[in-house]
Length: 133
Length: 133
DNA sequence: TTACTTGCAAAGATTTTGCATCTGT
DNA sequence: ACAGATGCAAAATCTTTGCAAGTAA
Figure 1 (tube, protein in one colour):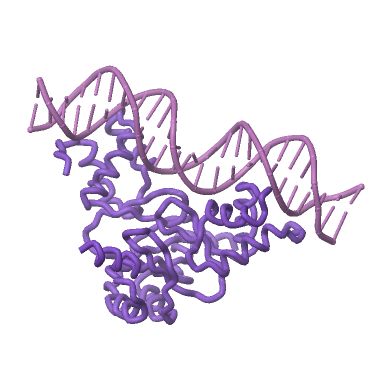
Figure 2 (tube, chains in turn brown, red, orange, blue):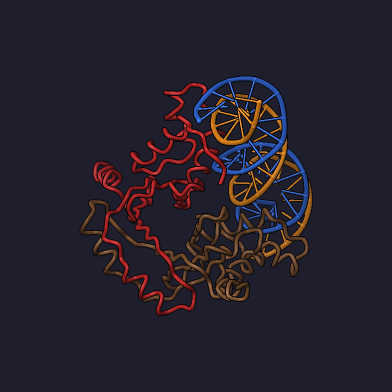
């Protein structure tokens, strides 16, 4: 492993992703931190995110909207994706270990983990639709 | 809706995705069909895939490897992603409607559906590892 | 004939990378 | 001083799009 020096930028990126449960992508992280660190460059955001992923502090998540998004690994949790506004939010549910067991019985592949994404309409979009009626 | 004419290319793309359970991405579909239709262009593959998605015949799937992959909608099923070779295969398991119900109780968002991805090591990679030992 | 489809190449969008400079240790 | 970190811009990768030519109905 490469010896890492401390990096204020890297620390801030990690804290931001950890605190923010909307799983922001690189551009959004860049815009948020640019306010505090005007000299910040987008390349550094990408580079540091990749280092954090390598170090196992972040997980890359893809929700199919064309951006790489990230999860600060703390506890396993699932995700909700709004089909209207494409927003992503955490879905706190007990880890369904029985699903992994069930799947393991059906396949010869070795299963280590699983992710679940729920799709639907978020509260905000539901309210918006109500008002339009 | 736009009036669609028949298109041999579009038909072949649909059939290929339907038959092939590895969820190939555009470039792979292009390479496979190029053998049969030498004049084929990558742009047409992308355009036709998008039309099929619009028509509801395909679903876009993202497994986080930087490519858009596709599913010919027939029956709901889950996926297995090999962490080593990144291959994707179907994981046939009864639809876990209870999970959707469970999640619905925990959130105010309206949940319509869910996807599950299992991660681990596929049979081929397992065998490869065995041989190396 | 009309207007959808195609090939080609250029343009877009997101992410990575080379290089000179800066900085933590 | 050394090696990692940064800013900047160019490059790489995947996908979309404009345009002229081809073609199903």
